[in-house]
Amino acid sequence: MTVEAILLVWGVRDEVLERIPVKGSWLYGEYDFIAKVEFSGEAEAEAFERSLRRIINGGTYKLLPIKLSAIKSEKGGVELEEILVKGIQVREAP
Image 1: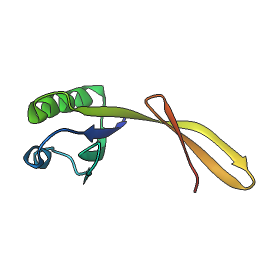
Image 2: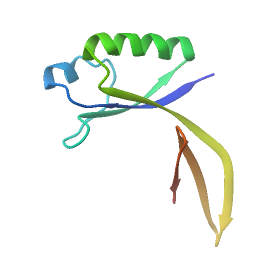
Image 3: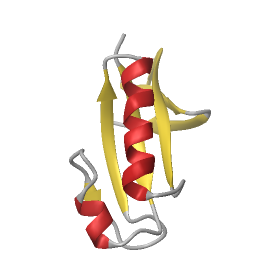
Image 4: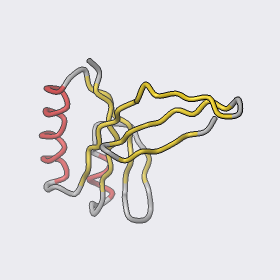
């Protein structure tokens, strides 16, 4: 089972961000880096987290699992998909 997550990193220098082993976007504000990451399973995700802790040298990151719901609805001909990110519900319109 594929596990998808959003990685958020903050409070680190640019040299540290360059060593993060995934492609993402650098941000300027509350967070310094964001990326969507995929793992083949829980074991790979845990190994990635251990590696990330060593690179960042602390816990200034969040790895938020993404759960795509199967809920779809038709409202006025517009289909809405609901996305759950660790308990936070976000609605996307096409």
